[in-house]
Amino acid sequence: MGVIESYLDRLPVGAATPRLSLGEGSTPLVPARRLLSNLDLDLHLKCEGANPTGSFKDRGMVVAVAKASEAGARAVVCASTGNTAASASAYAARAGLGAIVLTPSGAIATAKASQARVAGARVLEVRGTFDAALECCCALAAEDGFVLVNSINPDRIEGQKTVVFELLEQLGRVPDVIALPFGGGGNLVALAKGLDEAGVEARLVAGQAKERATTYASAIRISKPAHAGEVAALVAAGRVEVFSLSDEEIGEAWLALATLEGVFCEPASAAGVAALQHVPLEPASLTVCILTGHGLKDPAAVEQAPGAPTSVEASLDAILEAIG
Ligand SMILES: *Cc1c(COP(=O)(O)O)cnc(C)c1O
Image (tube, rainbow, N blue to C red; front, side):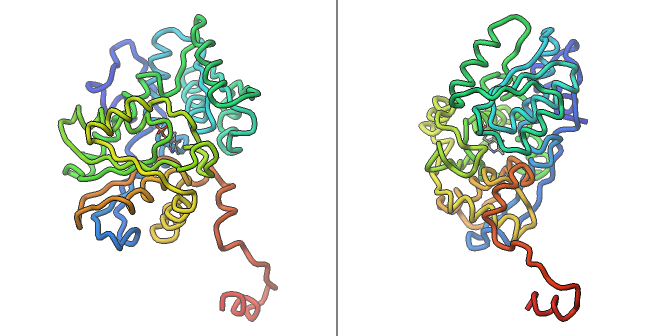
């Protein structure tokens, strides 16, 4: 049904808002019995990589693009190193709008750039940093007919908060802990808003890269989080705990998700799982890890994983020898 139709009464949409959808939301919630078994949690994985363009960004983007269309925009614009661009491009195509994507040169993962390109977005590689690209976007969005769809667009946060409503429906109770990655912080702010609106409380545990500017988890390679102020306020209020993780810790959690649970996500998505290792938790705590993006988004990361294929002769003997 999609996020807009499913949550009409909890989103800033009216009769004039297009019922845009690519079938986002309703993503699997998978119990995890082998992962983090040392912590003895009641652990579940929210597989947001199952969204139409492969990341949680679709929940917020569908609302932002629908509102841009309602406002009579000609095109949406975003600065992105990947998933925002892929999502904006797909929803703009669906809505019949243009999409302009500014990426810092060399910083976009190939698979995500392909998604934007194939959807007909105008992709411009800006010679500069992400922050420079975002500044250009803001300047462009001040011109007539262009709407910025980075997460500083409040409609993005509105759409993203729906993951909380969906989780409560799927679990049938309120989780004790929700763990997730912290890149720009839009998702953390959206989850806090969703919990508030649902009238429930849960601990939010966030994992960020220790080396923000250079981490291999490209989706959270963000030096200046756009929502830093709001996240700091949530931390001060005791609602969010942030943990800084090495690339090694993130990589281990990422591989454990795939090898122990069969869930292949982006490295960035594993930061919430890795953060849980740092939190004192009651045994049996009902815990949900939001896995933000699909593993196929970042095939380059796999090159660091063990298990490269071995070439063998086409004979049973050779195969038996190879598998030991
Ligand atoms: C955007 C993104 C993040 C970071 O989310 P924020 O809202 O910027 O904190 C994490 N993982 C993936 C896969 C993403 O696409």
